[in-house]
Image 1 (cartoon, rainbow over the protein chains, first blue to last red):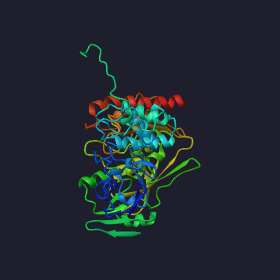
Image 2: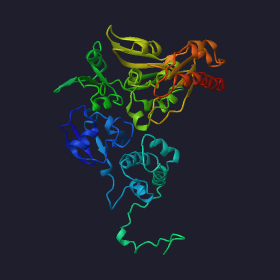
Image 3: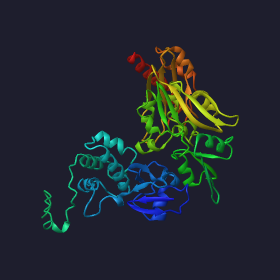
Image 4: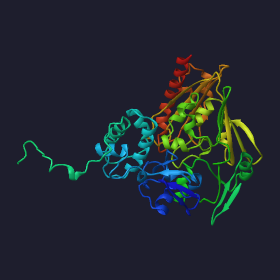
Length: 174
Length: 265
């Protein structure tokens, strides 16, 4: 079976009824798609198959023979984040990071399909993605901002930021 | 059709409906893989041995057409494709799980999914019953076509080929309980529809092994109080809701669905 993952072509030896998630993680070594619940219930394994968000854990490998798969590794890199990645960075939308890759792939599909997606669109698109840390507020804000184009994809280099930020806590000893 | 023999697996990949029917045979010793949303976790966890598996992808039974008010739904049509279907099917489809699951799960799987370990499955069933849909299936004794409510109790050993529903001139309504979370199956749902000849059909989902028609409620007509439906079903406790709660909510949902129909009139 053949698969294009993030632009690179692979000939796979995983069993045909293995999940796409198994092939990605165990054979190819792409680990951004997480083996969370492996029942389709948590969203952390979500990848784009021919541009559409799908659960890698529920996808039999043989049904995606010849398909093109994109994972978060195939979006931006540290210097050139994708709009959704940059929005997550700006809005502090990740905490432990376990759900983040799946959230970003689902959000990327939404933003590409629907510029100007509303909060309700985002809630619908991310409805199957569970985050056990942040409580979703920052994640939803980030995706709405990315859909509105209100995001700076050039990630600031911490080295360029002048000195320590001044933090004043009222009432605290100086 | 290509058959790939594996160490402990035989993979059947029919290239047409006829090949699928032939490969399925009488349904013994074959596991049918549609979208995979129910089976893949079972394979991954080793709860269902892969054994002899027939994959429906590529069998050409994934077409959805609307032919002069008759909806032809291939067994491998995805739930997401029904989101804009006439009511109550559209509402039922939109209420299933999430975007990704709806894009993968199939109508055939929804009709055939056995009751889960602790809850009923098959959230489209009640809507299809209300629409008076007919299921075409294959298996021992050959092909047969029958109403969804007659198919469901005797679906064991059947391969669903497609579903047909005449939706022209039919008005539908859907009322369901909120799900505990996105991926939960519905604890209780009621679908109702009135055909062009005035025939009222009401069905309930989340009530047991599969959805059922509610003839007592139907006979009471659109002015039914809803409590008539309690004579139609035997409600049970499960992980999603207690029988006690379902007994109190079933009449409410019947009444809500009928009120929608009255408002449409």
